[in-house]
Amino acid sequence: MMWQIYAAALRSLKREEAIENVEWIALAAIILVMLVVVGSMLKVGGQPIGQMIVVQILSWIGLWSPS
Image 1 (cartoon, one colour):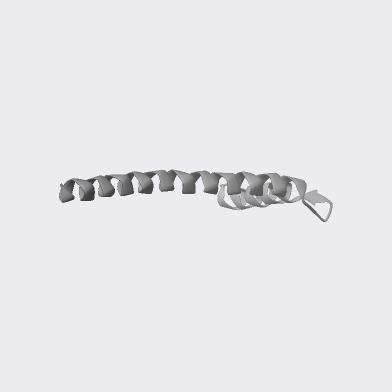
Image 2 (cartoon, one colour):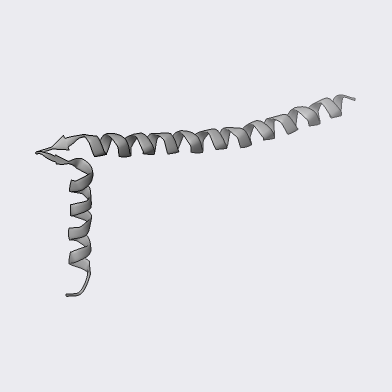
């Protein structure tokens, strides 16, 4: 009888861990979406931050690609 209660408690704990992983993934996704939205709205020197990041990445790609 006691081992059944113990086994049930362990099963519920494992289910909680799986649900907690999903919650962490969802939280990370929400934070990334918020960063993208805020980054697209903020302006530095008259240009959106997102545009500055894309320009910088394209310049790095230009350095690596053969011309």
